[in-house]
Image 1 (cartoon, rainbow, N blue to C red):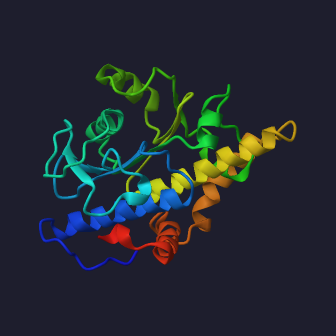
Image 2 (cartoon, one colour; image 1 turned 180 degrees about the horizontal axis):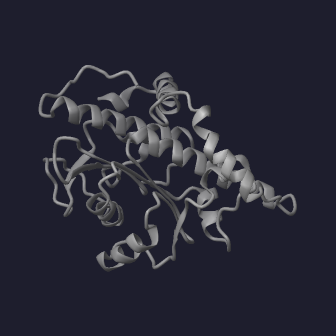
Length: 253
């Protein structure tokens, strides 16, 4: 992703780059139809500040997020800048939990897409019945719905349900993915969303054909050979940012 010249010296270069990448991601999500009014969240840890991460301003649509209006908060939800926008507690409680407890969860994405919510709301969840679903066989955690995620006491159950996985379907709720980088989380979300969309379409046509476990194993073993860059998701994400830039570059400010 091309990086614009830093326009505000109140932030370090590393923070400004993190802000631009995250703002671009919000615009990409909106372009792909993954917005949900003013709700849902994508967060990233700041590389040079222990326990600090960026989150979207509560009240803005994804299409309005920019590098400079992202809110910086600590792991306890305290603002670390003078940003006037509030933070959605439903986003803070869930994201801070994982940022606090999982060192490799650099980026966390949570959405309420129609397909993601639909698949999370059926018995069996995601089944290995299409190419993208086979990516995730044996790699998805599930957590039962307990209501809107605003209560800290749900945290231990979320952590227990996640275990050693970094992709979760929140039952009756939606998609949750994590990545060591934002592009890695992005390509996971994209593939999971595609898997869910295709499963919903397939279910409308008849009885789905499940891929045998031994074929799934070969598929997952060889997936890296279909990757365009050494960093998972980088080429995919950069392509989407270029497309966003042809529509609107205001996210860079």
